[in-house]
Amino acid sequence: MTGPSIASFQARVLSYYRTHRRDFPWRHTTDPYRIMVSEIMLQQTQVERVGEKYASFLTRFPDIESLAGATAEDVLSAWQGLGYNRRALALKAAAGEIVERFDGVIPDDEQGLQSLPGIGPYTASAILVFAFNRPVVMIETNIRRVFIHCFFSDRTGVADREILPLVEATLVRENPREWYNALMDYGRHLGATIENPNRRSRHYSRQAPFEGSNRQLRGKILRLLIGGGETAVGDLSRNLGLPESVIEPVLVRLADEGFITREDNRVRIA
Image (spheres, rainbow, N blue to C red):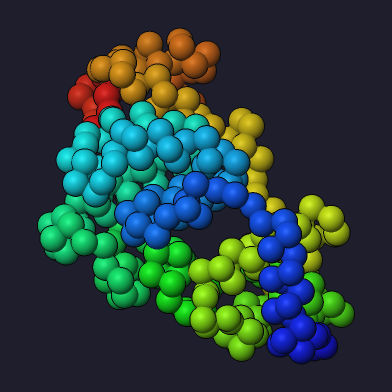
């Protein structure tokens, strides 16, 4: 492994950021609820799409109590366009647990955050960084890209366990919130201007195409059911232009995951 000194690396990243920083609404708040919403939205969804939905979602559910008390159908309706709809139900469930177990106060420790639905190690760390400015070590796609490019230029098969000590060593502890924003913006820049360094990560994999996938079909079914009340499976089949044999396994999975309920041959949002 070769690479720059810690000081020169930090200077490079921060210099880029102070000239080219991206502007997102969640960067203008340290409110833990708003940060939690943004981080769960940003899981597996492009920032531009999140930017389109973030404000309207918060207008509809301005605080943890309003989200906890909402119906699943209302939350799924507000979530449409973000994809991976199970995140919406997990976010609502997390809000309910925060109200019940933590008196409406979002935990400010990893253990408490990771005890909530939909919040794993990275999301917990991101909430600690961006809501509480805690100097915790974390890695995601853009951060990984920066470290592979700067410190592993002659390597393939780079594992995250090799990167994490460098993330910790270079962390700007006086302002981790700004530092991680800077890393992410610099990583986004690298992804747009050079061959993607993440292809040299041991953890790199291409996402399966969305068009024609079960993910796409799940989204179409939920959109038809939201606001549509109870619907016959045959009507879904006709509206989707697909035989019942194709949509049946998807309906079973949606029911198992708590999205829909079913009685005989009729389904509705749970």
